[in-house]
Length: 445
Image (tube, rainbow, N blue to C red; front, side, top):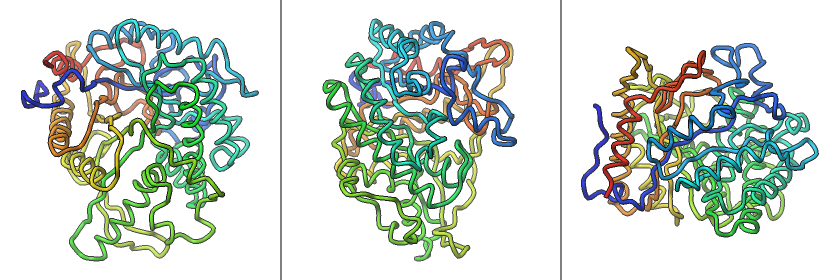
């Protein structure tokens, strides 16, 4: 497939529907000497933590090459660009603003606004300063108040030139992958740790939202959550029950506190010592009204009843077809997710803040003919069209990612970009998917 096509009357082809692409600070910026150390710098030093033993010291060298990347955004003709602020770049250890660090983002935001591209800023995309991790990181309640200070100072500095602020990107990944099963930074393990980290991140979100409301009332403020829809492996009652438990533990654990101010029922299945350290007033702080909810979607998973004594459920391996990272391609799950959320919650407007695929891209004769990625985008946009036609309010879509980049524990081995990056030379080459995305944007009424 060489193109992305939607029905000619699709709401996704109206100019009011925003299209963008996305990146995150640690994955692309490099320029390690001009910021504090983050938990990912430390994690990358661990033997076997990163698939190719790489790190983010250079990444896509975006700090030095941002003008080139900005030209790519202009060529794509996107309406919006989603990127994250590096906490270790913009704040000192004393909790003060670093003028040089914040100036980079001010320059980028001014350039975007000058060309009519809406800046979507994420305040936290996983790169906690290491000095805060040394004091307990997200296991330490005080880190939520450090985030509050960070959100206060950054939003004052960037102001309402930012169209949209998200407090956090994917708290699930930071808490569960980073503190519960240890495959992401900082690499801690234990259910107790995962649940405590999740609670303190959600508390930080609520505190950050209050700062955004106070400092930048005309900018949109919200949070970005990732969802992996859960399906039962069979129609047996015990598998359906286990699937509900999995959904509560993986997805609703973050959604329900943000939307309704309470944890899901699965909290009762946890031992007292594994439950989150909730203090009086916390849930009210977490449950702030949102201007938008960012939804990140990549794949689905299947579940059946637990086979081990301590487990809540059994998670099956991904079934085919899969992307290069091994995730099942199942576009229908995005439609199911959007309609299920819409039926269950009173939602603010939604943005699909990440959607994309790692594919085994090959550079042949100076071109990357990633027809598989084009097909992935096409199928998922059609599912968003179907969800909108069924009454779900979706306001925009961000392709993940603008550039091939440092893909966390996978290092540089997995490529998600619309643009191919040669990490030896830093040469950028737009792929077929970039051309297809550009053509879709151009086709709008």
